[in-house]
Image 1 (cartoon, rainbow, N blue to C red):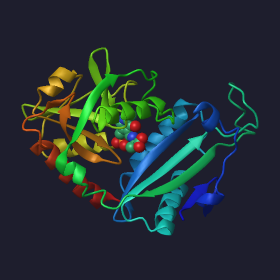
Image 2: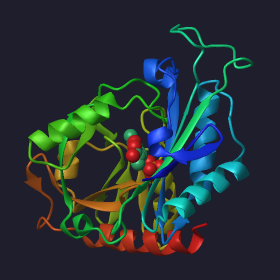
Image 3: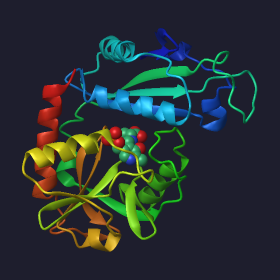
Image 4: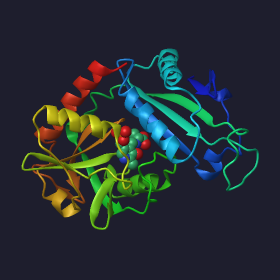
Length: 286
Ligand code: PDD
């Protein structure tokens, strides 16, 4: 049985609970982070901690735990649960004021709820899916306008994954005003004339921590990067496509809306970027 962390305490998962009045439960009034673990170490902890603070600030939520303590909780959960490869999920909500009310409770009297738990994923780094590549479908992006805040409002992304599953695909890319925004839980890229193309940062997409690292590594490896919008048609005609996220690292996309990219196998740019990302991230893991 897992040991989880709830509001300052470690406990077995079956003893952990939060109030039915918690605003995370009633209003999706909460933010989260997913940090991957490789070789028992945290990948890009700093990046996730910085983005957590950004999400909290954007929603006028107090930070319930400082950076050092947060790192210690992550490490302790990895230790207690013997995680070699996997993920740590962290969620902070505005807490429970003991009733349902749209108005935010006074932060002086209502403390945020903090929950962390581990998810073991043996074989995460050497996933067979990365060798095969994934199939995506396109769906309309009907999410709200602050996708840069990592909130727990994940109903539409869940629906998108179900639509993909129903269509025999692995995931969905979302389209707004004719352009790809991002994947349901990842950032989206294409490769054209050897150049890596991905949408620029704005409130329209999540500012991926993996995205930032991958673009940095790509430039260090003298690969060209262009941050601009692209359409599904352009993606279908691209040499390669891929996604990035903390849980998939760099994952090749080999088919978009039934159209195979190139020969339908993972391309060299995505494959190389995955290797570089894993190698460099492991070196910097804490
Ligand atoms: N999802 N875009 C969306 C909509 C996401 O939900 C995520 C992450 C990303 C990639 O961000 P990062 O590289 O920081 O993981 C982009 C996480 C993994 C999840 O919900 O499980």
